[in-house]
Image (tube, rainbow, N blue to C red; front, side):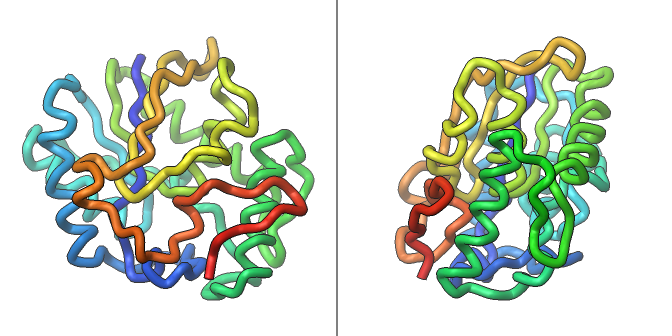
Length: 227
């Protein structure tokens, strides 16, 4: 089956560069709503037969235009939400953001014992995310899964068999960027394409936003451009 992992539209937290992972989370900015509205036309050639969203409001708002256009129901999955920031929730300083990103990178590279400060380890993340990807893959030829920047990148880094674990962290994933894979939970996944820009192109990008979860993720000990 084909799996389209789509990052949600822009939120106020993305503009500020804030770690914002609590439920139900914020809605979309005006730009985020425009990004969401561009998705049906951008995916017009994809025969999508199921749409899944996380429990966070921003994914439901982003997926709504596509669901309305295709006449499909939004299926809420409890394991597709963003990687919990724990003790770092709501922070935007350079050290906190780097700690969050480096922990996520470690999981994608196989260090699942590393724990997010005040939250979970990588085993917990992959259990919940893998479980809902399996649900999306069951009975769907093409499923659109609306999720979150760090979650999509970490899961793809660990599960795509044809790219190095560093690939997802080295490539941009802006709001409404689309990651396309083929395969199954049993046979594994192959990355087909990584469209890191918004589905409407640069006209729907916000280069002034501080959004660290859309920018290349640093390797451990590196730096991040969050500000």
